[in-house]
Image (cartoon, rainbow, N blue to C red):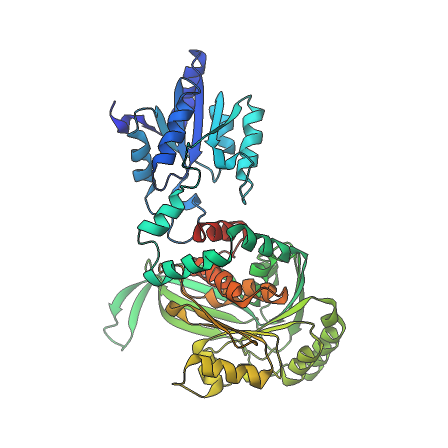
Length: 510
């Protein structure tokens, strides 16, 4: 039979399986990603076919393959074709949902088959347990096939080893890292963050992306003319950091400043995670900070940026209110995370208070076009954890050329900080602990959609890990995994969710 005739649309598959049931045929259903077919897959599918008359296989769509950046390696069309080429597979279809729950309810198989590795419902997403429940609901028997010697062979490990998913440096790093940490250990530590309470302080920024099509140089002016297409807005700055954090920590309180003149309060509140409790101070002499970027579509090339903000110090009475509020709540939290974009919200007096009262203080002081040379990490008298990028470190230390380890050591001594991570773009990141050890972690993804917000994601996920006392080599690994996700997201359209990150960690450590 022509393999392409086996590939069906989901609606067609439902009609076919209904007809097969009416004919008294016994239907077996398998579901998965099948990114790289190997002997374990083939034996699993052949064994599944032995449980009935007709074998139906559904395949996870590309956009639902939650195994991290760079996956799937093979497109949906290729994965469907490969499965359809197997003689004992009768029908193949793309799944419409992230898991097989609704598919099982639609197909109503007599048997739902999974590999033996899922016998204990071991899946960080919980999807296998939900699929098991769906199978019971439609009267299907859950069957676990024995891979007969291939229990430890997985598409992920084969792809990581034999395909150019990662660079040579990253493959070597991961091989050594797997000797120290198991994926289950890392995920267990991350799951322990949910018991923490975090206070996040910093500047609110509403990021606007205006997508345009360049038309060429204006005939009458020395400028580029562009055709406007559409726009979208993101909750950026401290809002993005709070949302990232809220996916891992049980309770997050966020303290920030909005403008009275155009507060955008409704939009901002609508974008916050349910477990983020906001406390806003309203500045009467300013709008809420907006950064508008004009972007060439569809390449996401940023052409021009405009700031709408007031970066002078807060009015004295407003600073007093902020000081009094922080003085009261700072001791209540397990850690304090400061995202300082240098837009006037955090005065020297407020910084001194935060540094003196926070149980565990994590700081990220960013350099941008609006504060260049004025918003240095050295304005903080102390911190327990610092996460900045290499240009920010060099600017703070006024040193362009010294080895990064030398500059980290100087920063550590100057601010009495015991944990430091310096993000380095395509090079990766360098972590330092007060025992004098340095840990370099390479990048885990070379596919860049948008760099904006990657540093915020790294900082937000790494901070509670640092507060919990996780080793610095593990912080570098977790932070780079979060950063790999972030560069695949347009702006702050989405936050770093726990379950996809857990699955990516499992993918990396297979």
